[in-house]
Image (tube, rainbow, N blue to C red; front, side):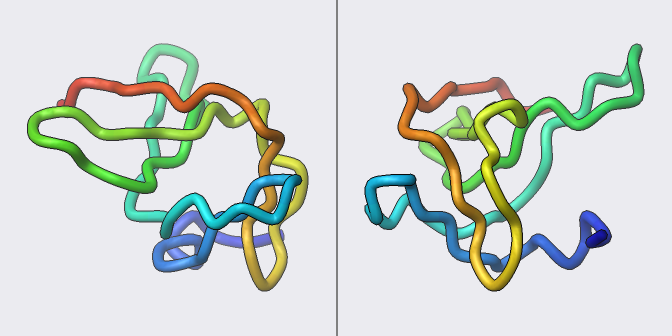
Length: 75
């Protein structure tokens, strides 16, 4: 088990061995109290995130399923 703070700076790769980026932040559903995504890049006023359900493994790197990346507005 890892703390959320330990994920910051971890490199993210797809299941096709493609480098995606580096974890910068997390997206949390404040109503449910659950993590819904991990932010890996910011473009202007939007943050690009990986949906939590796309995570395959977290170890030395973060491994995700190849899916469309979502853009979320900053809070």
